[in-house]
Image (cartoon, rainbow, N blue to C red; front, side):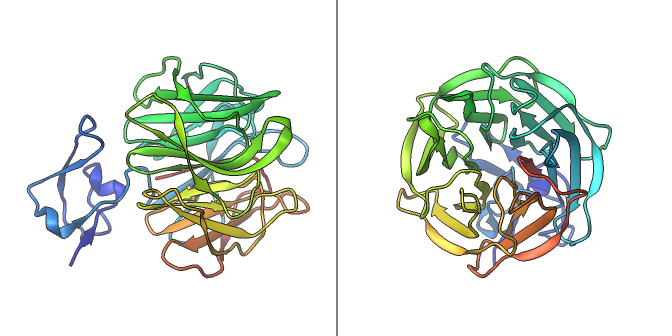
Length: 335
């Protein structure tokens, strides 16, 4: 029987998945993103992406209908209670991109902090610190996460852009240009596999919506390639990632409840994976090991609801508690 190892165990902490048994694990970031398990039988282990959460989800920034926000919310992935205050960003901003390391969340770009990368600890509510700048100003970008770096792809900074930025989790220097998307694109969803980043849906030039899924390598700055399509063209869509699949939920001009599922290994059109319980656009996408979450967002006004859906079943999502307040245009990260 296989044992699923969460990101908390990958980083040397005991916890769920092995009944408290500690594992010594080494991550080899120079070997195409493969895990090297030390002192255990590899045949008994199942890989889980390092950016997925097993403890808490976080939302950063947003818009409450009248002003941009600097607040960071924290909620339990296992219990549907109301989110708690987890400090503040260095600047109030909305439509920012989110990335997750094993220890910290990052909120990059966005209206109000167009080139600012904020970094906040998952284990301390002392608030964010400045973690350098993007190479260009970005509003409505998408965020992706590898084991060592965060990525911020595309944007709408008054005119649409296709730049992919890469920044190190451990260094607060200016982000580097990491190639380009095949088209200018903003307000889409970001997903991450162990080797690649994805942008799905969003606006293109002229504010035309798109269903295209873009894929780019974490190991090469050669830019992106088309990776199939969503079932419905839409913007304001929120992204979630399991080990093998990307999910794009909600979004649209006329707000829709569709959750799309696409394989990281195949560039075919996404399939319907059930519906959101509360229909939203411009929400925060959050990824746990077995579930995806869509937090906050907008229907006819801002909402505070957290949607939760299973990766393994295409049934309707369930209500998973609330954020501190109603808001949209939010970044989402996980621990």
